[in-house]
Amino acid sequence: MYCPNCNSPIDESEYFCGNCGINLRPKNPESDKIMSTGFVEKTLPQYAKLKTIPRLSVAAYISYLSFFGGAIIALFISPTYGLLAGLVGIISASFVSRKYHIIHKSVGLVLASALIIFSIAVVSHNYDILKRNQSANKLNSSNSLLSSTVNTSCYSFSFSIQLNLSANDSSCSIEAYNGSSPNNSTVFYKILSIENPNINQTNFMGLIGPVIVQDIKQSLNGFSIVSEKQTTFAGNLAFAVLANNNSANNSVIEEGVYHPSSGANFFDIIYSNDYPNVDLSSLQSSWTWKKY
Picture 1 (cartoon, helix red, strand yellow):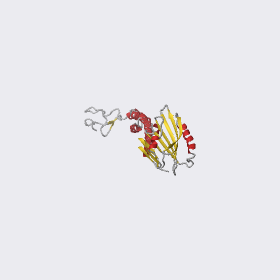
Picture 2 (picture 1 turned 135 degrees about the vertical axis):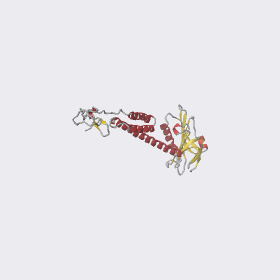
Picture 3 (picture 1 turned 90 degrees about the vertical axis):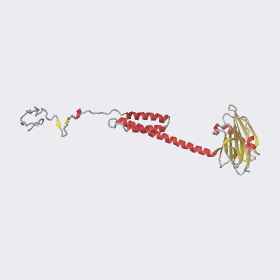
Picture 4 (picture 1 turned 120 degrees about the horizontal axis):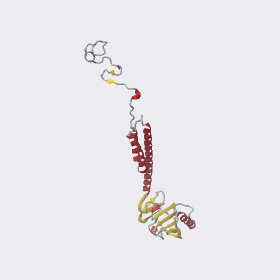
């Protein structure tokens, strides 16, 4: 037998090497295990091992901040920004530890997903409204144009100024006004063409007068009737009613005209202006009938 330290010959019964004095028999031979690599493996019981619990990751805070910030943006500024904030929230929440922070991770994912769904719904709703408005504007622009002349299959005439003209190709009814719509205009013309076989030259005055008076009383709040008279318009029988709104400095004249023809035989002409005592003399001066 040889000494493991100095390789001197020793007896198996000896406790110490006679040459170098090393202890040949340690008191706890199993306390250390010599591994093949030469390193010492020190074993600890499982309960004594240190468990490292990671802190709440910064991504969780980013998720919540993204959600609440994006929600405010989506509600008050733009749903597109809210959509982007929701995507950032989902990406951030995906980095949160599922093992130790499952609640934070789940809440962040749910809130961010809800924000994305809400933002998409708002964007879709706004897009639908935009398309409807574009369709309505396209329809209005196809039927409305700026013009100083009117030419239908029943009559033609001209204005002294250019007005927004809205006409229907299938009838002789028109609207013309100087604003963006009839409701916010100071100059407004409306002509309705009607075909009524029960109206003739004999009964026209008795039928039309009461109808026009009742129409003004029911339709024009704040207006009072100034005059009612039988007259003529462009060579045809007519009944005219004038009404004023003094507080608004506005006047309206509505005139029913009987024009015998094979088509429309009754024309209701309405003219409104900011100036009192309006009449249809300027309209008559350029009016030409096309059907007899």
